[in-house]
Length: 376
Image (tube, rainbow, N blue to C red; front, top):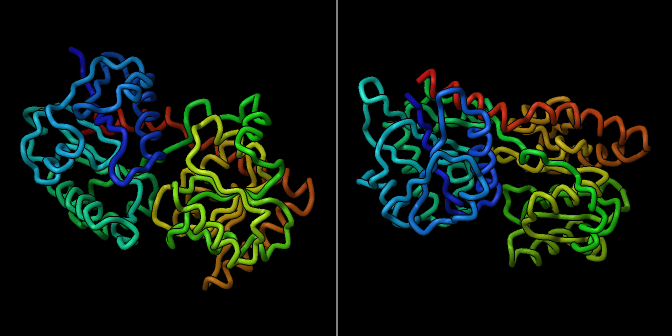
């Protein structure tokens, strides 16, 4: 008898988060590649969804389309009404899942969902009210009906248990990773030229939202005295002027700024390949995807000592502890200046980053997911 793991494979969960779409695809790929003997993976996707996403996974035993399209399906899931998805072993890389009453003991039905980011709870003003409402409603439903909730760090596990106390004994920690085979491409220089980027720069990621901490990051670069170009990636379309304004307020001249949007994995790896250091000022309770990219590629990391960064970066970079914003800016500035002060200093941090980066693997994550469902 074949055991089928049914993965909710949706392109995005509102708001549009490309890193979550990428993570969903990579986890599905790893689940297929790592399926134990006698097990297979089937995808569940909304009607009218992205066929390219499904095709990119490969090796799926089948694809089950729901009768509802994405928006209608999201509403139905929030209300807990019939969706036609059915039972079985269901794993969702997000909260997008049928969280309804089921019988795990007799029917062997089980539903596991994932929470990567607590922004709907900790910085709700940064999101549309409908998005915040959807996430809160789905976590509440998870408290009633999920067999387990996966989070990427132990610090997030603590926070989820505080937000939804009924979930405390059902939270499991499984970290994310960079895409399978993520490495600096052989044509990295050409890719950076196509993106109109210089060589040798300080790299940051994110946008102008307060939780991203980009203002502190840019101020830290300015305070460091490091006179290198600055590249900011993953800036949402239309937010570029706001990022340049943050830079200007931090004392960074516009001529040094290079602002780019969301990049595919190969272009992103090429950008990291040209960076002398990655600065991560955010203290948000969310999995730091780009920090993991930097560690994976051996790029020196200077990060704020948030609960998440303490756990993810660990000894793979420089963690700056600060009592307030001013201390964080000066501390990160000093750390950045030290990190690039000599070739030996940069190489030392690159080795530490690369060593730590090996701790993150979608293959290992998939193994833990299979083990979790087996335990359930």
